[in-house]
Image (cartoon, rainbow, N blue to C red; front, side):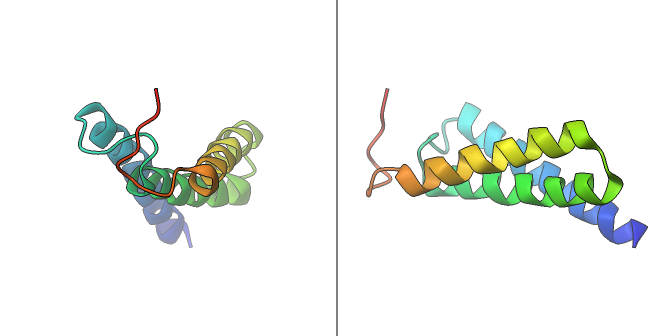
Amino acid sequence: MDAILQLLSLVGAALVLGAYVALQKRWWTSTGAAYLCANLLGALFLTAVATIDRRVGFIVLEATWALVSLTSLVRRPARDGVQQN
């Protein structure tokens, strides 16, 4: 079980950090589906690990990150090419 949790946390961190790098390199936009989905999935993985480990601070951080990503994904413009300032 510990190995699975470690893998899940590494994948979650890679998704969140990869999305951040892609945003900084301007490969993705902050309203793009790829960016938002990577953040959502990564945050959900990390929330699950934090919940199992009973790390309240990380649960709050990652659950909030997931909620913001989900809200942005649902409310994003219909076309990826639309960029808001």
